[in-house]
Length: 98
Ligand SMILES: [Zn+2]
Image (cartoon, rainbow, N blue to C red; front, side, top):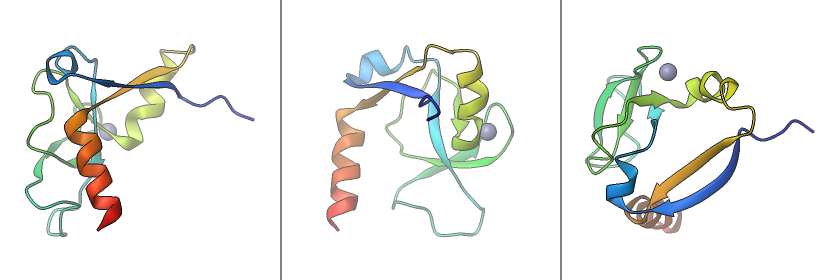
């Protein structure tokens, strides 16, 4: 079996999230309904794909789209340490329950 790209996942504070290397965002097709009400929009910093993201994501790290994760993972053969904030976990849980 292929080794997973993300080998560790931690919940971190909003302040710690500002020090992450990247923020991973969902792709977006302009004109489509966003995944969540209040999402903001931009471009992937690696491939220029249109992306959508929550207004509370970290501001400093470059935003990348899901499709660019393998590109980033190539530079980290030991695996990527993924992180989420408590706010993101809360919203994912609410979305799954609705
Ligand atoms: Zn991309």
